[in-house]
Amino acid sequence: MSETRSVEITAPDIEEAIEAGLKQLDVSRENVIVEVLEEPARGILGLGSRFARVRLTTAARPLSEMVVTSAKKEAPPRPKKQQVYRPRIEDDDEEDFDFEDDDSYASPSVIPLDEAEWTDELKAGKETLEEILRLMEVDASVDVEATEHSKEENPTYVLHVQGDDLSSLIGRRGNTLAALQYITRLIASRNLQKRADFTVDVDGYKAKRIDRLHKMAHQMADQAAERNRIMKLKPMPAHERRIIHMALRHRSDVTTRSQGEGKFRRVTIIPQKD
Image 1 (tube, rainbow, N blue to C red):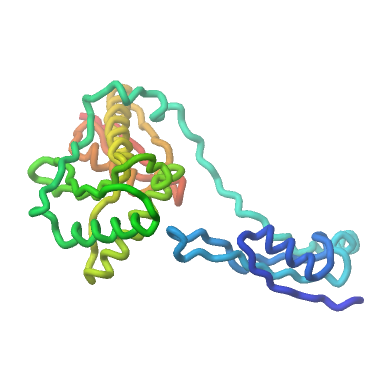
Image 2 (image 1 turned 180 degrees about the horizontal axis):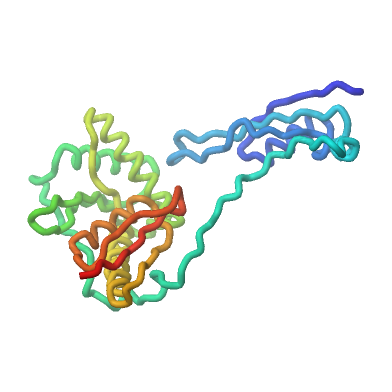
């Protein structure tokens, strides 16, 4: 019986690490046991990225042979990706409505903020964001704005990046924009030694999304109340769920609740009887 051999490999992704390990051990895939020691991570704007790390261990004999000769004793199962239950998305969702033509439930408008009204957090955030854009060689301006709320509500402050062809700052589903906001807040907070609270938007991307969510929330609430039926929205991130909850919090005919786990967590709109 031959001795087992083991090797640990790091690479940008898991498959690349496995292939490199197989070459180093000079064996085929079916004759090794693969352990994923560390998943790869992309990081935020290149910060905090991490390679995949795997350990390959050769079997004393081919794994196929081990399975055949172990009829009464099951071989340890090979690592599998975790199967996650995906809840069914109901037809009663935002795609059933034409939000662009309905202004009856528009979200709060955004207005420019005079420099005299800028807080320390906004000043630090603007300086940080402008420096990040300069280092990225992006030609854009940063305006300071605030959402126009009712008197009893606190405004939301926005650092609005504007320029030509800024789609690269938004990314797929706003992922790059989320990273840009995260790193801007982080640096500004560290410089101030306190939490810097503001939103970063690019060419009105978030404003348009918030407006769409407000319209969707109220139209779905109307449906729930009129049909006396619980309406389930599509799964969405925490900050978007909060927008739905806030949009409907003053309505007496419905109430909202978040349900589900992880990335499948969603808002449920529940009709309230008189």
